[in-house]
Length: 280
Length: 128
Image 1 (cartoon, each protein chain N blue to C red):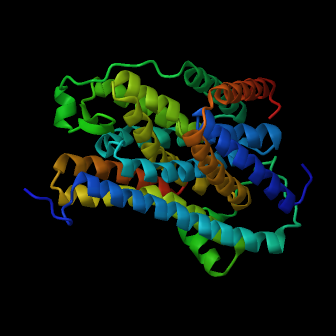
Image 2 (cartoon, rainbow over the protein chains, first blue to last red; image 1 turned 90 degrees about the vertical axis):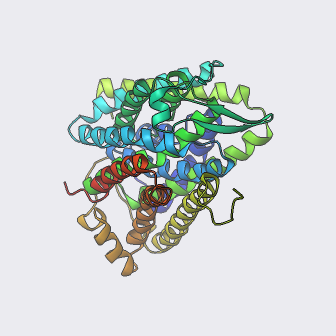
Image 3 (cartoon, each protein chain N blue to C red; image 1 turned 135 degrees about the vertical axis):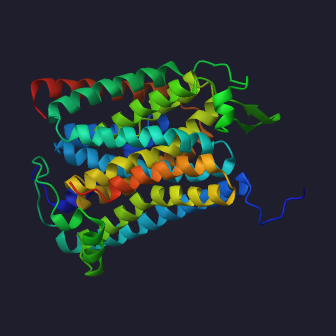
């Protein structure tokens, strides 16, 4: 688009506020919205888009994690143990992204976004909470407690190797696509390791910043991270996410959530289409 | 055993961790805003085509180059310094965890955290 940088900055800022808001309300996070916003709507090259998205992902997840850690939901040991998998995965993903054509990355992105939307719309089935002591989990001190209205409840994860493997995949996708991979991280903890949902979501959030940083350094070195794009997007997404969390605390957003997820599904299809037709 | 205020309990560590993360994000945002204002005042009327990937100039690709540019009050360099502070926040968080696990004498988690730190360092100081 032939516009000056002030105009571009303004459009990006407004778009990023909306992305942060939708990210918070849809439960998908900002990263998966930034990439389609930049590539499809503003015709920015996908490499710049991924670099910019990674930076905003680190900002929103660190900001949110600061609050959750203090509330006592996140499990720092589980987070750290699984971060071994996600960071190695993220470096692998960033490395793979270096030689995959942009079209392929767009198609993978579209399918991952569709999968995340499906998971968000499905909601979380009330899974059982693992309480039986798992020897490996105990050896790694992964058991913990979290606050409930009836006092502290204890939990102990199961299927630790399976959860770890899923986290490796989440890390690869994060590094490849510039997203937080929150949906997959929650799936690994909530469904495979049988952790309480609130512990899974907050620990996932806690991990996203470190995971994204593990690929962001490589993207920085490759010149994918542009100050002019990052400035409005980073600030806008942070503001949008903050507004979103305030709205979530005060209003029921059931219908909005569905609408936003349908919009995201449409963006996902558009990404796949652009990738297939080479019109990125 | 009664808890002293200075005990390295998990709860207290969580509070400090939360403060560390918040400080990093706020500091990064303030620096980016400063750089952004400078940038828009000077270069807001410039044009740039982002639909073609050219890659950033060499000085914005490495922490040392970014700091050097920011010190010259180059507005893009200042924004990148903010981005760098943001990238350093998770890094600092992991370093902090390594220190606390060491104080708690938790050898397994010292090793786990050290591995994460090595991977992060590899990325942050990556030379392609």
